[in-house]
Image (cartoon, rainbow, N blue to C red; front, side, top):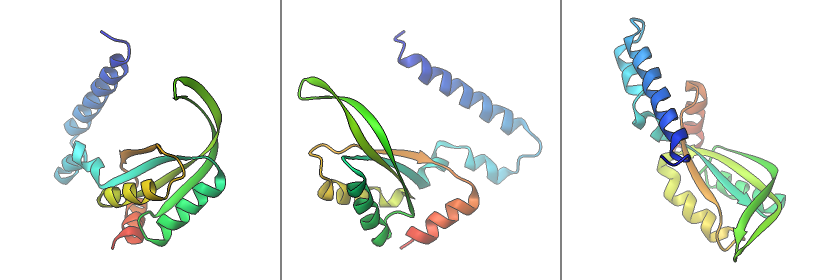
Length: 144
């Protein structure tokens, strides 16, 4: 078995064990079973986007916020190491973690791709769940 598959299998078995233990609890209300399905994560996204500098990250975040595509953006510096045109590169970049509803994914991806300064931008989506008040806030801010 390849070593890259092992963490995925471990994660799967931990998740399955956790779900079984929660479902066996007498305290669990029936509607909460639905919250534990893979679809429960599909309503919200955190999207990871890299930029060459802070100004580009802020400009994109402002654009997405003004269009009500995202509720929030966290921007911070990183050092990236990556393959580019046959060699390993390393340089400073900025990351924007943006939060939105899944229904905005296609629009967001298109807007970022069109405005992004990189030829091949990193736009990675992760399905997430959050506390109820935060999820409601995301809906309220991006709910058009």
